[in-house]
Length: 125
Image 1: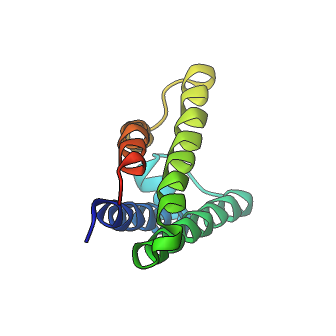
Image 2: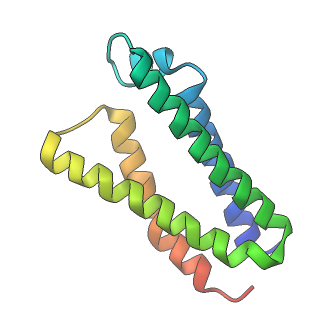
Image 3: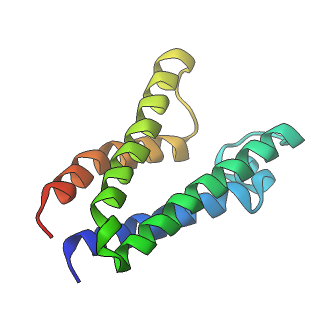
């Protein structure tokens, strides 16, 4: 296996775990990891939609592990995915203040992933 394939496997597994944390039990996620009270139906709806969006990317990335044709595009989407998330989180940090510790961990993960993904993307297969 090549570095792009390993990278996509790791990205797929990581994003799948985060997705399932969000969406399988939004109430548990909000109370245990965000320290917030009850989650209404609107927040549950958002958490589950985000879960499926993340899982959609994870499935595409895993598919690209086995399909050369989509591998570079898949790595590029990890840059767009993580870059978009981290920009939104940084805007929220400035405008809204410090979130729960788990969300700060996500900021660090996404911020570090962008240059790594770019490096992987630029490497020849």
